[in-house]
Amino acid sequence: MRTRTRIARIDATSDPHRATAVPIYQTATFAQDSATEFSQYDYSRSGNPTRHALERHLAQLEGGGHALAYGSGLAAVTAVTRLLVPGDELLAHDDVYGGSWRLFCQVLEPRGIRVRFADLSTTASATASITAATKLVFCESLSNPLLFACDLRLLARLAHERGARLCVDATAVSPYLQQPLRLGADFVVHSATKYLGGHGDLTAGVVTVRDEHLARQLAFLQNAEGTALSPFDSFLLLRSVQTLSLRLDRQQQSAQRVAEWLTRRRGIARVLFPGLAGHKTAAVHKNQASGPGAVISFTTGDDRVSKRLVENLRLFRIAVSFGGVQSSVSLPCSMSHKSIPTAARTDRDLGLDLVRLSIGIEDVRDLLDDLDQAIAIATATGDTEAAAAPLPRSLTEQTDDGDDRDAH
Ligand SMILES: Cc1ncc(COP(=O)(O)O)c(C=O)c1O
Image (cartoon, rainbow, N blue to C red; front, top):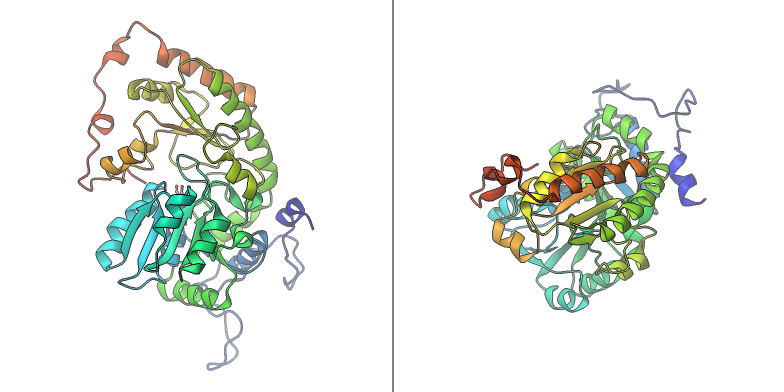
């Protein structure tokens, strides 16, 4: 079966009434015939037919193995890191979602996990950084927000040679475009809030593994810690996943056009999109994924211009997150990546002028018109009153004091 068919076909054959869509088993408990011997399901935290149908479907999209569904992407990332013990080293790529950064530095490190960041997108740096002390290598490919690819075959080989495991957060591409388990990864995680969900109406996360022992450990933790996705959200996610390829085909076709258009538009300094030949890791990405995805980052060279641009868009909504059918825009350093300290952001070339677009399924001509008018306003010379006004605190004083109340 080809990928698009596998995505669209849900296996509901175990339903006692032969329903063709998986029903929502919105129940906390399942009655038992015996007080000492239990049937397959007894309590929804431990197991639920709707969630299991979703997990089976997600696993086969990754090319087999076992999938576990959680209440959010961060719960999924957390689940993988639960397998570390104090003293273990987590080596993470230095371009990761701000919430993962916060989890690693503010939750895991104080509890004894050694956390290190390195550029894992270049062979030399990856080879030098993964050591015998490393227990888990974590990367996003594509990374958020700079959209760099890491060579997953290389990272898997290096990790395994040195006794570590590789976890790939593939949220920005989804299993439709890339299946890291087939490239050697031990864990794949997704924020299903993004492309898998696709409609901006749920938060969910998924971990997929091939190894039976890892699957059992994760299933134990999912039950012991009560992190599983609810039956209703499992139903919503299963419903959404069926249209993943349709949505992404359209989204990435439009994204390619928008990215190329931005490279020609006056006022735009740098465009980051793996579908552009000049993108630093475009060749690596092409070698391990079947498409560039539909997130584009770009800079204007001026924080104020970027802010004005974002605020003058009409179709693109200012919103954290990405991957939905409706296009959205964000300033990562003020929003999704605000929890990363300013110095670390500066090191990683994450400037305040960085704009991230998530391309939806609208008519691309409307998206281009919208960008065109917003760029025109933002770059207009002859300062307007608004343009000359001081920037709000959130954009001028990026604090490192842990005040990340606005960071999602
Ligand atoms: C790459 C990546 N991984 C994980 C997450 C966390 O997912 P969630 O917001 O569903 O917890 C995000 C959220 O933006 C993300 O962008």
